[in-house]
Length: 142
Length: 129
Image (tube, rainbow over all chains, first blue to last red):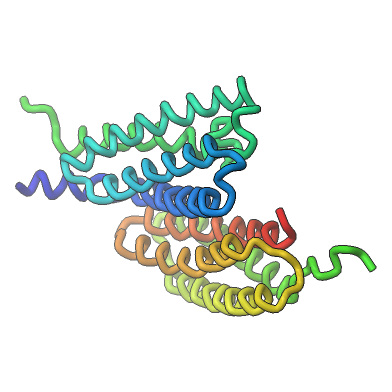
């Protein structure tokens, strides 16, 4: 029980604080941006705006799950970070190969260059952090 | 008369002051982060409180300007940035203070770095960017 509590706190302590803070900023930014885009000019670049909204959802899920830190949350966060990584790599590559499909940019266009490439670094850090804290909090049985 | 005479917002000086002040606080946080024993955290929080007051003035003035301007400005996005600027620091301080280790100051650092980004974006939206 105590071990579970410790593990729960682990993901949101120390460097995890920074990670969650950056995730929260991206969750807010992506949500607000895609909401405005979809509400005001959806027809201009439907694919880009839908992808921004999808990204926003995964950022929210990752933020909440990393902050909660329970066993289930960690699993969901792992999935969310993995999807984000695949998403940023796929959309990044697609926006390089077929720029005409993206008349307006998304959070993940060009591997997130509009956001200082943080979108490609964030899921990697997230996955590493989940792994790192699970090793500390739950040492392998002897 | 140049077409963009109304481009410059009345409170542009305050924008600049807040931008520089946030960056100074970011440097300050970075120094605290590197010290083995962070001292003077309260002063930093005080400075952030003053910046927050400035952001509040900016938000109120921004809404007034938006209502009175003749130009077409993307109102929703502009007000969105004003609100984001208001919410950011209180959220960062809360998230920082609930962490006892030095990483809490890192959260303040992130908050201080994001404020200038919001101010710059807000001005881009104002001038139609």
